[in-house]
Length: 490
Image (cartoon, rainbow, N blue to C red; front, side, top):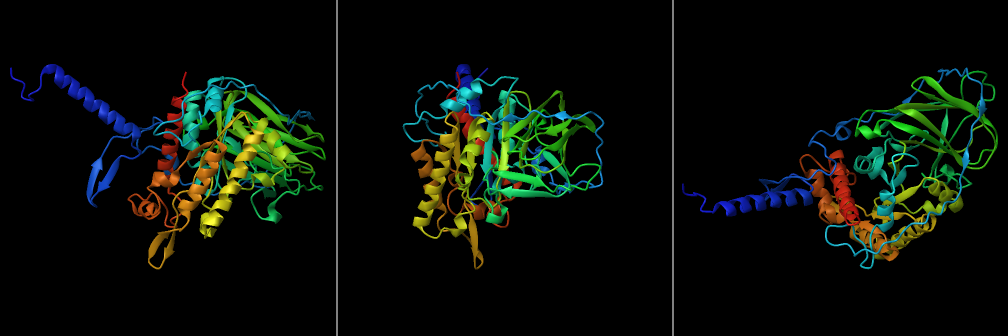
């Protein structure tokens, strides 16, 4: 029978194979499922999903984050077990001996590095050493309000934990400023929040905030006979990846303790452990459960120490922390006590630091000189992290496009590109990775397009992404990281 396609049998097979390969490549490099051409023609293309999720099934994007609940202050959690001293591990320096392997400079499609860089040699080696038990390898994602609520960070956590193991949502504040997508927080008592990046009246005179740059104290009532002065409760929401929903290790990070206080830890309405904390240096208390848990309460009684954060992690694998610093421009890490900050980071087994800032400075930068000054401030933060964590790699994520309304039109801030250039220059000068969010969006002027797309990818303020926009950027960041790590696969 004649071949109506005019192709020999072998050529037809080769044509089909080539076509499938072409669609596979398109799906790999393409971050979205369709493009609008000439105003009304929609061109649909396949998508690559690095997280293995079904399209449209993301519960985190669809959720409505409820307001932070406040528990009934009359609740009394009874402690019937005898009290014994808790053991706190002081912060100490660690100096692991890491191998260095020379690799080629990155090619197209990778994170941006300077030409002489071998990329993420140290981080890739650390991932290669990850074990199913012991201390998890930490990735700390610092950023401004663009990452609040675990946006973007959640996608990174899902990616790393699906490939290298690990569970839990990572570091959490004792009393959060905004809700977290994966964890429901409830508090009892009066809590005070101190931030390294806030007004002077919001800062600690000691400068000792721990690795999150945020600290808390509670109000102690010396006349109280029953119950506790304060309680911090953490409950998994059941949203996002399954790996976020349970954990086996609970770590309380604290500053120097000047007066003894009582600590009781509950899980699933049962007393887990209780005891006294005696005066001592800054450190951390680690509790490990034989079985996965999804909620924990920490109850305090007595004069408040400075409390830094609670980490909810698995045994081994990777932990990814969301540290959203609303209002921060990203250059206040150097305002903290360097020794304390460094020891806090070293005790956390950090393999990668991600810094995502720029948006809070752009509206106030009105000259090239100010953009360059901002770049120098960011460079000093990079130098700090390199000094404190020489065994870790660093990624700087640049700013998005941002627009301001002038009359009836939304116009990008005039020095967005200058800030991007200054930040990229700082990254290249320090030999770290850079991710260009402005370029990803389409350059200067793209924010107005993102805000008017259907569904919109940016909010009506033309500054913040919608959940759909944050997800698109987060997936692009995951893909860039995956590309870089693929170069180091053994």
